[in-house]
Image (cartoon, rainbow over all chains, first blue to last red; front, side):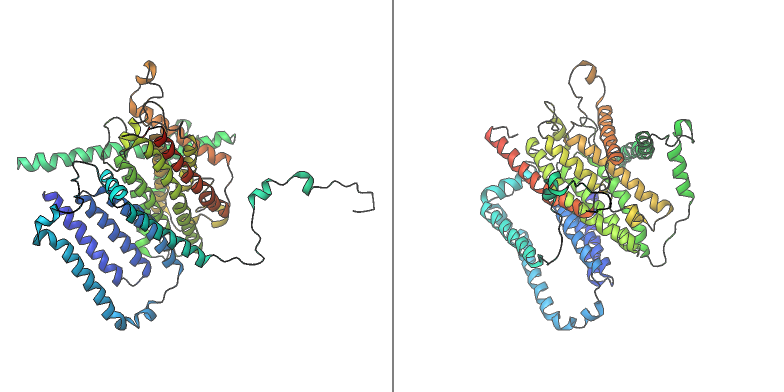
Length: 204
Length: 336
């Protein structure tokens, strides 16, 4: 157990420290890199509580795809952070309110185990313990049976977001010559090559 | 005290020894993969290849390594020092830690985790960071362009790799790599899933930035891509990382499609040969195809690369996932 606790405190300490660095680092690229470190340590914490599937998905989706795009954008943009800091005080109350709401909600959810330990046994679909079924299996059993409509709905929302992003960025410019590979492949010799008899000194 | 010894110290020693037993052959493999690449390319281009250092040039990798060790590490004045030095280390580290879940034989694996395939996929998707960090930290336009190209390329081809992996997992019913291999006892997945095998191999070429998809380094247009500014051991770490990734992708190919440690036929002369040797032979074969492709195919243009990834591989692999799932459900072949 000592090793587990040590690992927990290690991951948690790095997670909190890198989360602080995300908002304090001067260089935006460093911020994103610290965000990636934070994701990674969160994945470590998931592994410690036996949620290995969630941990791997966190690394694949957030670190492997989302953060790459973040990094991409942040590197390409020339953001002036001095200008951005000007209005910080103005937004501070909203930020603090959102933070407080999140904190209270987290406390309510996690506090249930302490305040009413019996409540976890009467939930609609009790979570199977990791030693009975594997993570992936347990998640599949829940998502594709009991929560299938919610699951499909979230998929639809993502699809709509994707279509929205494509519609917003798609623009058809005039005068751009595009390569059409099927046209190129289906070209016949007699359509494009003409053989002429050229008389000497006559030209074409 | 005795509990501390049996509970923590002894297992730690065992694990460290196992890690050494994996890393050392891997490093030798990387060294000789560089040699094999030069020899194979030379043979295909009717040249000699390295043949001066040692018999048949066999000591050439050692000489190259010593040369790189003895050179000076130059850090450009405009570079972001921390990220610049960290990037090659990250590349090399990620290329090594993926080997923790690779099964070399039945039960011969460092960490037999339930989500082994996902772990491999996650680690290989992280490989892009080393390159993009190097490109950005170098503070040089060629390096930056190389880094951006590589990021876009790896993210694109990861999607189709993901679908290929899902197809295989549908036929296995488990995410454990040992289960994946054991599910191929009757027939290797390369046969029923042949189109997916081809898609996976081509995507693996793109994922490891190998020819014909080596645009991130594209020496004819980007000088050397993301590693222009790197020298000596920092460059060597990128180089080693790239080759380690090639070996890793070959290992993944042989586990997912070529039956891992299993012999091709479970009859007398074949099953005398131990599993790890079959596994090594399959890896060597896939690596040879990597080199063969490099000697044969010219480099893709960037828009063609993206077109291949998003407009051909993605719809095709998505279709094949649905088809495989449909066939498995219709005929009741779903693994329980």
